[in-house]
Amino acid sequence: MPGVRPRARALKEKWQKDPLGIALYQKIFERGKLILPQIAAEDLSGSAGSVVFPACHPLYAGEDTPLDDLLFLLHFAKARNAQRILEVGTYRSRTTLAFHLNCPHAAVVSYDIVTRPSPYRDIANRQAAIQFRLKPFSTASAELLREPKFDLIFIDGSHKKEDVLSDSRLAMQIVAKDGAIIWHDYRIRDYRTDTLEVPEALRELAPAKPVFWVRGTTCAIYREI
Ligand SMILES: C[S@@+](CC[C@H](N)C(=O)[O-])C[C@H]1O[C@@H](n2cnc3c(N)ncnc32)[C@H](O)[C@@H]1O
Image 1: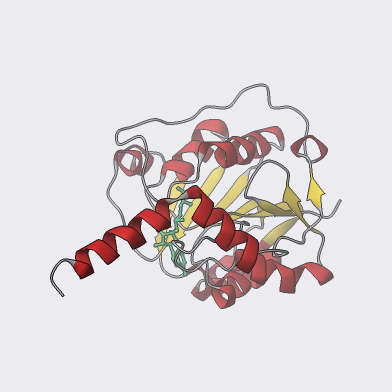
Image 2: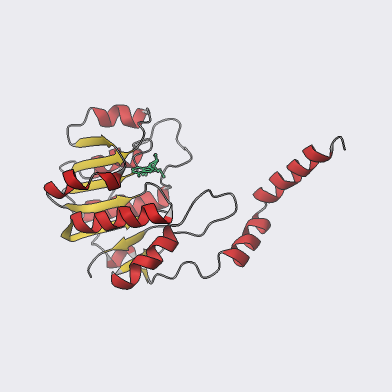
């Protein structure tokens, strides 16, 4: 019937943006997914005093780590005086560059399976302390196991359960003794989210490891406390 399909599509799109629809979906299908014990940022490090955010146009892009989470991440890296930082999932290189700006003496290594040009990448490419590696993180164990261990590993690559688990297993082997692993996107889905199975992966990992949900963020952290 003419006009029915476009109207149905418009209705679906409206419903998918409706906060009530999203809240209902989450209440019904995502309840009880976030089971990790919570921890406050102040229980994880001293105070860094300040952090620096790089800012280039476009200011926002789909897969950037949101500012709330970035604040925790950069503050933690700086307060802990991280000397070797590893990121899984470079995307626009905004967080990669931010790590460097806040920890200028640290070696920063970032893995991705694609190279995305961006103003952050242009600046990061000129920094000797930043190294980009183009390959799936979980295939890099041979090179990584030969290197000094990392004080901070930020896992923000593929969000499929099996990938998060294999990335996490490798991270556990290369994190320094008093270092930390931070996962991004420890949060529930709504029906617009593609694959987001970080909670499912960490649920499997957590009984054997001290993993916490950092209050006020969508980050989870592993640290022997
Ligand atoms: C959410 S984005 C990363 C955002 C970035 N960490 C930031 O803070 O702005 C996820 C990235 O992971 C990359 N990725 C997907 N699978 C990967 C893998 N197996 N190893 C490394 N990177 C991967 C994607 O290409 C994408 O750029």
